[in-house]
Structures are given as structure tokens and as C-alpha cells.
Length: 233
Image (tube, rainbow, N blue to C red; front, side, top):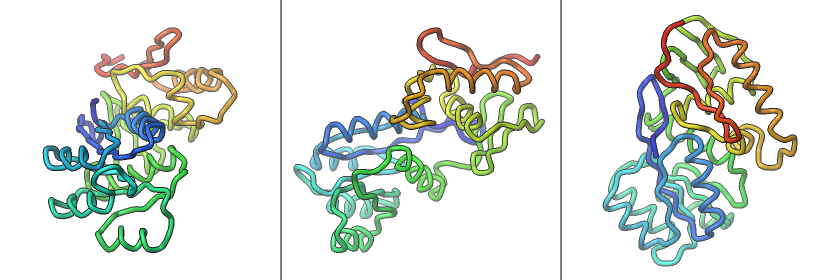
């Protein structure tokens, strides 16, 4: 998968997710990939050890209870090899496991079940802290500042509502790729939203009205694509 687009360049952000619950593993990978990150996903601790030894990651998300090597051992190996940020995602909420994780220098600890939307935001906070993610998104002449919800086109500031901005940011992270209606609803409004595609269409219409150039292409029946490489008006 292509990585997140930050500071006007395409950066390959690779995340390792280790989780033995196949449903949670697939859901976590889907959410991270929809945000524009490259994901290596596995359900076995021994397989994860091989990946850790053979690859370089910007972030690791680890369960604790795993077949093969457990999450605490994986954390120790990651720390032995370097300073990759590690987020523990586990059903074990007791003090002993949390203290063990932080003693071994885990960067964050999330207790399942957890919101996938919140998990992605916590992952992004660790990526920003490590320097892997920087503070702007850009594609062509469009620049977004996610921390302040500000946007500019050719240096001229534009005003968007928070939801409009989030839709535009997701399209920008995936510039040149189609983002489906389902992905937009799940990432912006959450999986439990039952209002249908109309909310997406309405926000896209408002974005097109506010952008100086129509850079959002409709892929009928699928979703939308932010055109990367459009010409000046």
C-alpha cells in the first residue's frame, strides 16, 4: 500500500499489526489502510518476530496473548532493535500487564474492545511524535493543516466545516486513489452511522463549491478520487 502524504511528499508509512483475533486483525488493517498507511498484518507471534527481524516499521501494534511469541517478548525485541513506537492493543487491562508493557518502554496501551477511529488517531499521534508524520498534508496545489483544521489552495486559505475538512483530508491522504463511500462513512462518521450515502454526497457537493477548481472526481457507484496532478485553472 502507498503511505500517507505529508509535507507535500509521498511517504511510505509501514505499520505492523499483530493480533490473533482474525476479525479484529482485519478490521484494524482495513482502517489503517483506508487512512493511507501500509500494513503488515499477522496473527502469530513467531511470524511477527520474523517480520520484525526482516523489516523496518514506523509503528507496531501488538496484542499480548498470541500463539508463539507473546506481545511482551515482541515488545522487548523491538526495543532491542531500535526505537520504533509500540502501541499495545489487548484485552488484558490489569495493572501487572500494563506496568510490564511500560517498563519495557511501550508508548501506549489500549484495552480491547476499542473504537477503531480512536485507535487510528492514537496511532497517528505516535507517528507524529516520532517524526514519521509531519504536520501538513498536500496534493498538488492543495495544502491541509490537520491539527488546526485549516486548508489553503495556491496559498489562499479556504474555510470548511470540520466534517468537510475530514472528508477532504481523507481524500488527500489517498490522492490519486478511489476512496469508497463505505470507507468515507466508516472513517468520518463511524460504522454505526445509518444515514446512508447522502451525507457523503452532500459534503462532496459543498467541498466542490468551495474549492477554486473541481479536483474531486466521482467514480459512479464506488466513491470519489482526489485528482493528483491537475492543471491550473
